[in-house]
Every structure is written in C-alpha cells, then in structure tokens.
Image (cartoon, rainbow, N blue to C red; front, side, top):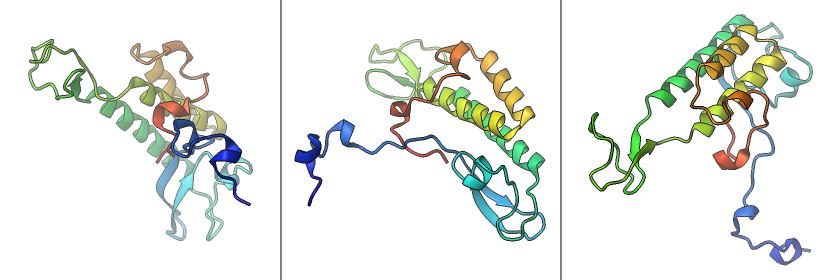
Amino acid sequence: FSAGPSLLRCPGYAPHAEFREPCVTFVLRDAVCSYCSDCRDLDLCRDERLVEDGAWDCATCGQPYDAQWIEGTLVAHVNERVRTAQLQDLRCTRDRKIKVSHLASRCICGGLFKCSEDSRGVADDLRVMHNIATHHGFHVLREVVEWVVASSPNLPDHAGVLCQPVDHSVRGGGARD
C-alpha cells in the first residue's frame, strides 16, 4: 500500500505538499547545570518537562537550573534580535544590490531600497519570546518584549504582535534555533 500523490490528490512538488512545522519552537543552546556541569539544549516550547511539568531541573543530577541566568540569556537574545533587525542592510527592490551610499534615496538602476529582512520575522520572534515569558513566568523578559513592541512602530500590526498566533508561512515552517 502506497500513499502516493494520487491518494492525497497533491502533486509531490506542490507548495502545499511541503512539510510545515506544526508549532513554533525556541531552543536555548548550552544551558549548563551549576551543580554537575551538564550542558544541554533546552526546547522551551516543546520539552514536556519544561512546558507541562514546569520542572526546571537538570536531567542528569536533578538540581534546578538557574532561572535568572536563563531569563537573562533570553533577554540578551531579544536584544540581539532587535539589534540585528535595526542594523540590517537595505537592498534594491529591482536588482537586489545592497545600498552603499548613505545619501542616495534610490539605487543607480532607479529601484527603491527596502530592508533585507521582512519585519514579520522579528514580530514572530518577539511573539514567541512573549509566549515563553508568559508561560514560564519570566517577568523581566515579558517587560522587555512589551517595551520593544511598544517602542517599535514599524512592526507589522504593531498593536497585535503580542496577541496573535505566529504565521508559519512567513518563515517557511522551519524550527527556531
């Protein structure tokens, strides 16, 4: 028995045949236990021990992770994400060349300049961080994300960034790292 394209009525290389991740995730890399020095990657959105049980303890020795260090690392990630979004290159919409002149409003070819990265990607990342902060009780992280959103009028749907689900089609469905 084969569940080929004829059974699903979907061509194998159609855009809607591509796998899309069912939920967004965020993996905190290299979380080190202060007791046994075990180093692990923690999936803050999918790990059952973290999400459902709220167990922030080391899988090896059972000692709790330093929650302030984790929250501080997440705040640093938000700051870095916002910084990279603000310092991104401008590209010509016609020939895709990077803007090199600070004074030119148009490219040599006559095209307009546009940010390299779509602002929906930043909004999605901030939404994920806000959901993590709310679920895990990271108050400082939540305040930082809310402040960034409130002071960033260029985010798409500025007022609804923190209350809407993430649109996977913008990112191509890949997992967040």
